[in-house]
Length: 79
Image (cartoon, rainbow, N blue to C red; front, side, top):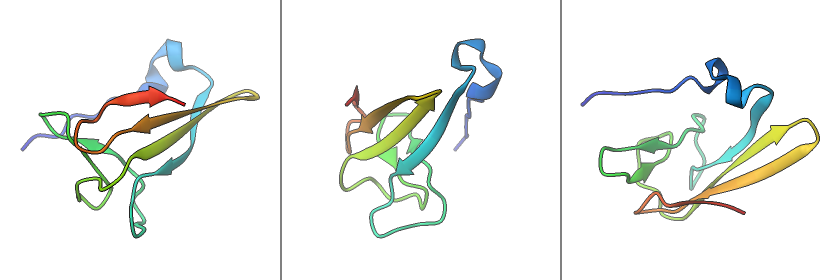
């Protein structure tokens, strides 16, 4: 099992964009992460498969966008 991580802070196209909130853990967890396996299935910070859609809120200046990650498929949509 290998872990790959992308450091978006180092990419110029994401300059000024911050993650202001992550809601991925059903039942709560201290590690608010979304992990994706090699098949595209998303997991929460505890390593449990998502039981409902997760959201990530992005902030750039005064602009906010929310991205939804669907359980099972990992399909993402900007809300």
